[in-house]
Length: 192
Image (cartoon, rainbow, N blue to C red; front, side, top):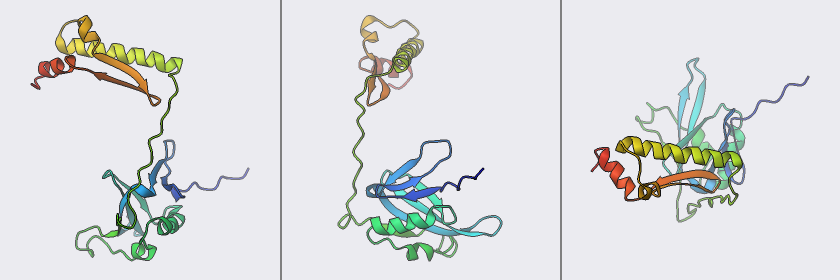
């Protein structure tokens, strides 16, 4: 029996950088949503040197990968193609945190004049809920009502019941509590 080739930890394509997680959904950071790239040279406990690369998303979240991970070479080649002004040589010339004066150097920062941010359009899922999702919606609706009644210490009136909303939007179960019930709940919890 032939063993499978090791799966890369990261790779990049025309969409962006794919962070591959075992057993979980992969994360894709679109090229148009990367604000900057930072990096530091470090050593593992055994003394093996590596570069930690920080991909800073426009939202403020950073995603990290190491130069010793499978997929690093291919990803940095794609970074040079898709991030105007990014140079792998600059990435690989970073020094340690101590040598950099206790800062993490910015290797590349988006120049919006040359390369404006581009957000991926939201995927719209117009489908109706499955029977299982309908059952989950009903349970969620009843749980929301029970929570409101527990906070208030009484049963909800018909008008208040109408304020507890549960629906299905874009392939997800969603819910909210409309006014005036939401204000009454806040007041009972000491918020106003």
